Length: 512
Ligand code: FAD
Ligand code: NAP
Image 1 (cartoon, protein in one colour):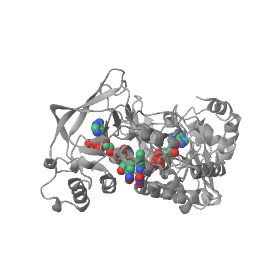
Image 2 (cartoon, rainbow, N blue to C red):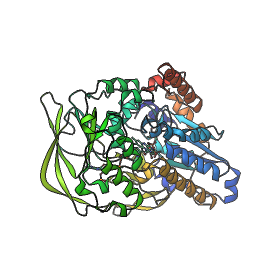
Image 3 (cartoon, rainbow, N blue to C red):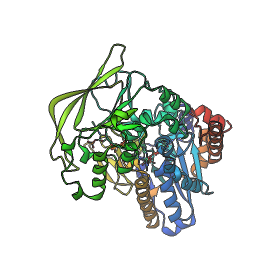
Image 4 (cartoon, rainbow, N blue to C red):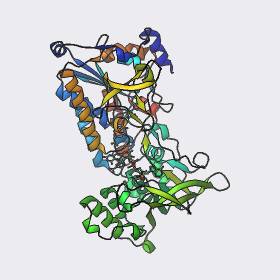
């Protein structure tokens, strides 16, 4: 626990929850509710947090939102995930700026709830302390880890990166500012997983650096990509083209890269009658069968979609770096069924790999303090247990001390990737956040129980504890200063922005 958290506990948490906070809930009559503000805390400032705030503020009059963000800057994966050459996707930030401009909205950046993990330098507020000051809390903290393959060589060998690290690095996420991926060991790269994140990683390796240079990719990434020797990218899936997770626009974009060729797809995995497939699947198959305009023998770089290969182990060369990846061929139970399973065939294939990326999905983890307040987290699925509409389930122990999930934990909600799992684009995250917002509004208006706010003063009650820990809190005006400084830096190098890649630089730009 950091010093801020400790200083916090010494003051407001003397009555540290002896019974689960879950049991301390309040019922107000609907008329009482309408006389007072509805005080809501949101943990996380990505799309799920902002869209939930927007929905609730538009449905419950007098809503006051305090949004807590572990980093000094907002927007989650819109800033640190979305590829730099997709600036149009970031337009949702205009909506978020509009939400944040409301006098009923407070951004509290550089403050993590529970604990955002060792990689965040943020000040921490213990969950139980915070919950005392709100009617409701919404967990929208996304997925701060990634899934692992669990195969030999994965942890020991140099040159194997998770897509989350690599994406974070080229997007300026402070946690990975020092990643320094080595792309100079040889010309073949392997990416394991066939989702859209894998395609983003491939594009960064294959795209002309002069095109990327104009985006908000970091200058450090540009320098590394300029030195890259990678010429051949394998994007490897354990299933087939009919089961691939990537989507039309993203695969088409790769096919269109200048001077980049696509190796022919294994046609035995493509249905004979593509025209009879549902529209989206048909278009996807058409694009893969048609391939790229650039012929392989004329291409400067090339890529392939390698299907039905499940990773077995990474092999190293002297010096500790990766040399190749060994796969087992798989067999699809029903090759043209999009939900088909696969089984191993025991046949092995080795692909030379001077660098490898694991792109098999992100993972959410429980926040410290969940047990104390009775929140049920499903470690296997990596989600907060909820009713599908974002109402968080309560853990309860019976007489034999066996834990059960019970119905809704009053006043506690979740939204986005931590509610649904780490899949979905911004539009689906918005729909998901709206469903949580609607559940909150419906519960509030029907007189359902919420958290028992001791004094209903939210951030005003918490601020003193945080400031005693000498923590620099970033409010929306501070973020605007950081934003302005990044844009000015960008102007100097001919791009929209040059991001700060350390929290220290961010705090200095905010005027600390
Ligand atoms: P996030 O966006 O991850 O936001 C969570 C926030 O919570 C973060 O800011 C985090 O710092 C903060 N946080 C974490 N822990 C704490 C804590 N303890 N206390 C306080 N704050 C905390 N979708 C598209 O539509 N188009 C795209 O081009 C696209 N590209 C993508 C590229 C990548 C690499 C990835 C991974 C996803 C992409 N997506 C894209 C999907 C999109 O980014 C997600 O749907 C969306 O960001 C999920 O929103 P979220 O709010 O649940 O999580
Ligand atoms: P994803 O879409 O779930 O894809 C994960 C991939 O990893 C799948 O191919 C999956 O194969 C594979 N995989 C999982 N476990 C594996 C294992 N143990 N061994 C081998 N392969 C394994 O996840 P993602 O690519 O991280 O993307 C997350 C979300 O962000 C998606 O909804 C995506 O669309 C979105 N996103 C969108 C954009 C965009 O719109 N441009 C860009 C990036 C991300 P199986 O199917 O066989 O499990």
